[in-house]
Amino acid sequence: MVPTTVAGSLQNDRMCEELSINIPIFMENDFMEPIRRPECCIYRVPQRLRQVNEEAYTPKLISIGPFHHNGKQPRDEENDEKDMRDMEKLKLGYLKEFCNRTMKCPKEIARIIEENEQKIRSCYSENFDISREDFVKMVLKDSTFIIELFLRADKKEKYKNDYLLSNPLLNRHILEDLILLENQLPFFILEELHENFSKGHSENSLFILARNYFCSCINSIPKEAEKEKGKKKEVKYFTDLIRYFHCPTKHKDFGDSIRDLSTAKQLYETVVIFKLDEVGGLLDIQFDKWYPTEICPCFTCSWLLNCLPCLKCFECLELTQPLLKIPKFEIDDITEGLFRNIMAWEQCYYPLEPYLCN
Image (tube, rainbow, N blue to C red; front, side, top):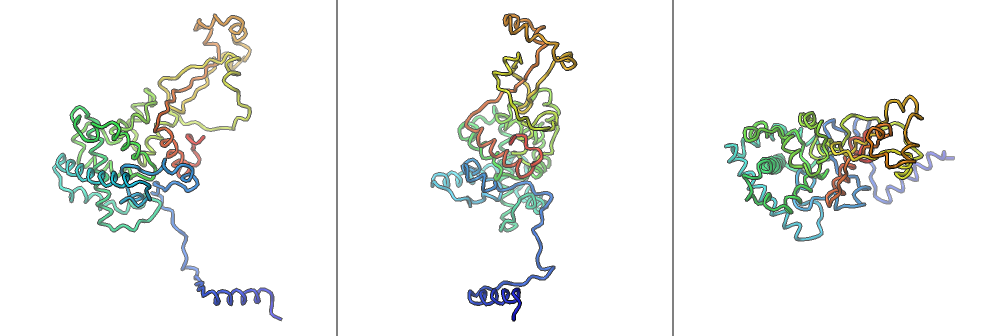
């Protein structure tokens, strides 16, 4: 009698032969799991997120980096493809202007990119079948376009006739594409090119130039933290930079989840005072209590203010009440795409600090 396990094995072998399936046998050293590079930080948006709203993650006007190089992402409209081709021509024009500005030839600029090619490639979550020459050309065009755009945007009065800056709608569409998670170059190569070639044309670092360009996305930056955040340069790329300015100014632990949430009406009825925080960041929500009430919760004027609401005009009485400071949250046509991309970035890179997701 043939043992059951052996019989099953013979049956599988015969099935494979009938189907002409050749299953190789790997030795121990023949198979290696994909290695996760520590520099990896630029990802494709997970499919489960993309299928909810694909348009929120796909560049519509200009492609940056290898993910959407040469319009490899399927597009629905021929006009979009034409716009992308026109933007490629514009990139070449900006490259020429950048070379004129810095008095450098493209080969000199490309040399910096060539020296960092492997480091740039390792920042992406995928390996790309792009030759070294084509990869360097792509980074050269994209990086010089971005730096030149930032330099011009920083001195708008001098470039008021610029093709992009003189067209607010077109410039807005460019900005929308530059914040997409899949449409990025590593920040370090942009910074290195700016430091080596164009630093003398602006008193600002690339970090400040980028912050100024994306100010409409980060207009809630706290004033008291502006100097501190202006010095920080440890960002991965533009999606990360915008997330950085939305995060709390002071690192906060999430703590335990709150199960029984009070409505705004319930808080108001307990004489919690709501106040708009004009200078706080988007996630800088603060709940302040008067110090004596922390020792003795009954030491409050809630009962008096409830009975005589007119007394709320006296600030001295308001100071005894719990204060909920809420930052201003402006919503426009770019908000959904911006937040979706930051949330996708958090899920890929900051799973333990999902501020925007939460």
